Image (tube, rainbow, N blue to C red; front, side):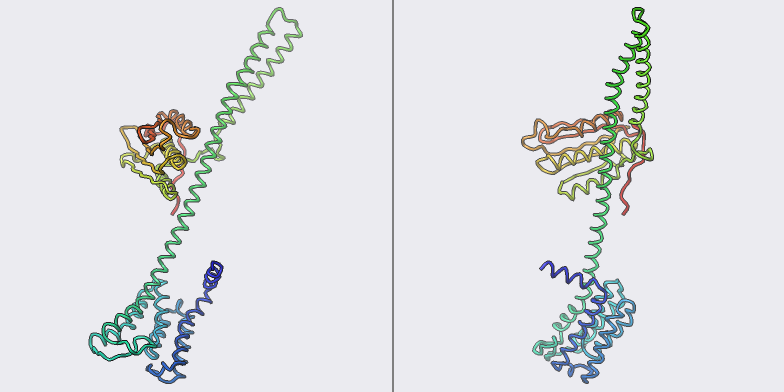
Length: 412
């Protein structure tokens, strides 16, 4: 069944197939009318004239309903007047509505309703007529006939509007998916960048504290032996050689530390996130089923790049922990300003067994706590009653790390 639906959809993606279907919708009822004798009730009683008009209308509407919609509309209306077949008008109403051509759509609907409205309001009759092509026992006049033709005239217009709405919704979903994929890619790049910088800093610290210390002790000891009066000339030369090699090693170690301390970005600028990206982040986690409440005090305004980047990454880490560990995927985020400080509060419900401590290593929160301290602020994350509260108190201005450019919001 799925294969059949896919083949059907693929067939009507072709413009030629849609043209053929439009012509068939017009020619099919005309052929049925010829076979059943319905053409005798039309203003054009001749079967040949009925057939020629129907075929001409099918060809014109099938081929010209897009580029020459007014010509096709005139042909469809003339066919309706001459043959009593409303199907060309139905096709044209749907087609022009799809392209938002409201004037020909109104003309089509008005022509269909003209005669039923005239008979209903100006020539009321109780006689039976042909409400449907194959039904003679229902009243074609009066309110019943007007309601039927009103529904018949408006239905293609409503279907065209519905099709437009579905396409717009599909385009919006695709655009949102593309923006979400872009944001996710930037999140992954930012995470990898942070891990790289953290690892480089850890390696630099280990080399400085470990290798540098031991080499310094080795150079100092060799220098002390070289000036010892009890040492022979050969020992002095060897110790001086060891000291020279050690000094060279310390110099090269300094160069390595400089390389590790250099920015990982090729252009020397580290991309950062801003407060505007928090809205997109919240929207992404809401789409994952997390109930997120977010309120930002208008007084917060624009902060330093370091503070905005920290706020974003703290919110991201909190929502990630909520998605992974919280008993109920719910979080409440509040961003406020007090003087020259910015306070970020994130609360989430605790699971019944997690009152003492949350599961996980806590490495992410520890790194963020260290960065908040380097920026001149503080970060605390502790259980409080039935909730887990994370509170960050950060300076509103730029301090700590060098300011970089914000990542910015996705282009619509």
